[in-house]
Length: 128
Image 1 (cartoon, rainbow, N blue to C red):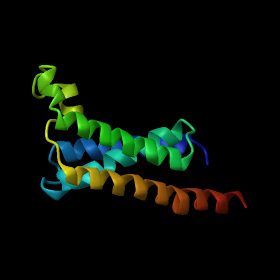
Image 2 (spheres, rainbow, N blue to C red; image 1 turned 180 degrees about the vertical axis):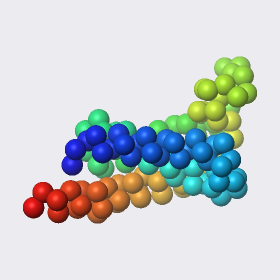
Image 3 (cartoon, helix red, strand yellow; image 1 turned 45 degrees about the horizontal axis):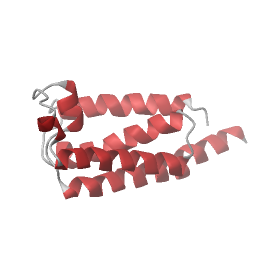
């Protein structure tokens, strides 16, 4: 599969994440859980665009989510004195939740499986 497809997927997921962050789809589960799943899918797509193997992309995306959640646990944004609403404050976040770790696992697993069974299979069909 051409890796430019992964850049397009990453862009679309990024735009969806912005809409979620702005409250376009409401809050609650959409922002709190679906957003966590999608951010890992976004990272997965970026890693795949960089030609990282599928399983490696999933592992790295999940690991990145776990690292950010760890930074939230130690309240890094407060330790650094970052201003609420700043880009880094928003990216890192300030609220640790063990549930988020589960969402990251779901996001990585879904991205990997969709890539494996949908994207790469579809490309294989078109090339035959």
